[in-house]
Each structure stands twice: as C-alpha cells, then as structure tokens.
Length: 494
Image 1 (cartoon, rainbow, N blue to C red):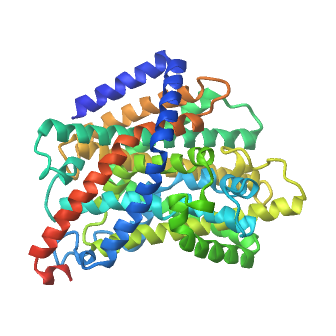
Image 2: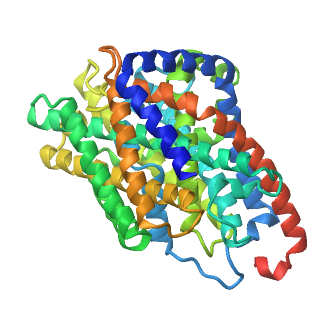
Image 3: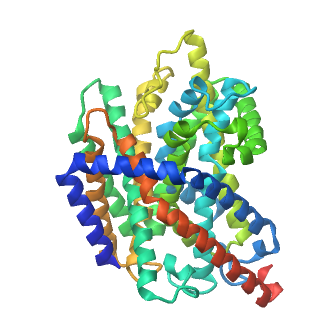
C-alpha cells in the first residue's frame, strides 16, 4: 500500500512540476464538471452525517463504549479537546477569523430579515459548525469501534471487510483514503504558509515572495516530522495544549478590548438562528439558496475540504478517544468545538463590524484572505506583538495538523499499527512536503490564480469518490452496530 500511494503521489507531483499550467487547466475543467453534477450532493451528505450522528448519540447505541466496560478515557477532557481541535481546525480559524464574517456582511449569501451582522455570523457558523465535525465524527466513531471493540487494524478498509472480501478492492479503498488525506493536508499547509508570508509582508512592509513561502513550508514540515517522530504523548499532545492556550489568550484579549455585551449578544442570537435554520440552510432550500456560484466558491469548497480532512482527523480523534462512549465522543465532537468556533468568529466578526462602522466607509480593508487578521490587529494595542503571536500560532497549528496526519498516514501504510514505525513517519513527512511544494507552484501557475483558488478546485475533485464511499461505509457500520448491540450484554454498555 505504501509503495502504491507513494508512486501515485510522486507521479502527480512530477506532472505538476513539469506541466504546471496544463495541470491547472485540467483541474479547472474537472472541478466545473463536479460542481455542476455533484455540488448539491455535498450538501445533502453533510446534513445526512449530522442527523446520523445525532440519532446514534441519542439512541441506546450511544452507550456503547470504545474499549472494555471498566476502561477509563486515556486522556483528560482538556487534553482530548485540545488535540481534536488542533487537528481538526487549527490554522483555518486564523485564516478566516475576520475576512469571512466581513465578506458575508458585505455580500449577504441570500436575502433575509435578519440584521446583516447576524446573517453574516450565522452563515459563517454554518460553514464551520456541525457539518464539518460530523464528517470527522463519523470516521472517529467507525474507526474507534473497529479498533477498540473489534480489535481490527487502523485501516478504513477494516470498516467494510465483512462486506467486501476482495483484497485488491480493499487496498484500493485504503489508497483512496490516503490520497484524499494527502490532498486535503497539502492544501491546508499551502494556505497556511501563504498566510504566514502575508503576515510577514504586513509587519515588515517587505516584499516576501514565493521563495519565502517555500522556506516556511520546509520549516513546518521539519517541525511536524519531529513532533510525529516523538509520538502522541510527547509531541502532538504537548504542542496541541500550547496552541490552545495561546489561541485562548489571543481570543480573550480581543474579546475584552471589544464591546463585550455586543459580542455575547451576537454570539447567542446567531447561534440560535443557526440551529433553527440549520436544515433549510443545509438543503439550500427556497429563500436559503445562495445560488450555484456562491455555493461553489464557499460551501461546496468547505464541504470538500472537511471531507478531505475527515479520514485522518477522524482516525486521530478515534485514536485519542479510547474509554469514551459513543455518546460522549459524538456529542463532544459535534458540540464543544462548534461552540468554541462560533464564539471565536463572534469576537472577531463583531469587532470587525464595529471597526467598519467607526470608519464610516469600507474600502475592502479586510478583503485579503491572507492579510485580513493582521490588518485587523493593526487597530488594537500591541499590534506588532499580536501579529507576531499570530504568525507563531499559525506555525503551531500547521505543525499539529501535519504531525497528526503524518502519524495517521503512517498507521495506514504500516499495516494499521496503532504506533507505526518511525521509518513510515519519515517517508510521509518527506512526500507531504514535496506535494505541498507542488500545490504552491500550482497556485502560482497563472497571474490571476492564487493558492486558495487552486486548493478549492483540487479538493472539490479529489473529495468526490470519497464522499460516495462514506455513504456506503455508514450503511455498513450501522448494520454492524445494530447487530453488536443486540448480541452484547447490556451491562457492558453502561
């Protein structure tokens, strides 16, 4: 499996290196085809995942524990939350903290009677909330069950091996999982390093170009390899806790510098409307339909991104969730990080709205995806310190995302071992680095293209086969879970 995956990745990377413009044109054509024929499938899949997980969590099946009946959680709720959030969101909340709420305020996705500030936050919550974590939670639940209850290997094919007996087909599914994971990961690294570059340009007023982005990619890949080399307890857990502590410090500094009552009011009001409007928004039904162009640029891309991250994030969450019940796992994954994200966007979004109101006019100051948060902090005390802290935080989040992905990919390729060999960790660190370089070059293929556009188009294509597989996997797993629940003594599920 390792040789096949690496071979595909190496060939893909070489094609991008030697035919960058032609590769971009092919990706663009394929992404339009996927959008036109399968775009709304992504929406329906997202809603289906949320409802599926809630049904299991709130049913008697939720009592089933990942492990033996007396087994206690391996990690505290604090360490568990820090690791799952660092792996699952991380740098993305810094990338979009200001730019996305302001964009939604200035360009409402659809007509609504809600105030523009609330609608902007509600739609931002929608794209960062329950659906993203439902994709992760589905894999965490499924892999956790097979790993800790059925004692199978940490492989996606383990979830369907009772149905699919052809070994070559199962290997193909594992390779598909690996490739989907790699494409999602390299997109995140490419976006993150480009934002760090944007921050350096803003702070120093210097013209850092492609060479700086490539250097940052090298640095982050090296740090991630070191963390993955140290393992979950010594590397990933420690870095995750540091990231969360710094994030909370930045969040609460901004919160206490803002109109606290306004922020809290917007948070509660937008969260309430998000819950009420969740189903029609997820179906783009009637007046909640923002149109195909808007959905393609935003929601379809987000759903494809979460899908691409679902295998490694879900498996990583499963790996750290031993001893928890399915109910604890699913409700924890759906609710805790979602509410944290909603509060984050409420603080930065509301504060940005008030800055714009105070200026009297808006001239796209927060329009730059890679520079908006640095421009935002320029309006606060200790601006330089905050911007430097943000850059360090971006590096930290990228490292924890990459190291957890390297660890999971190594589990895949090392015959599903829970603690894969360090040789596999080295190999995956190296090839993820090379693939990221290829994506960055792809993002510079044409003057009118940036890495965000390249990542959007690529992920919408690469996530599609995996989206169909998820439906199949969920059906097979539900049948297995119902069969297990009927045969397993009730006392062991308490």
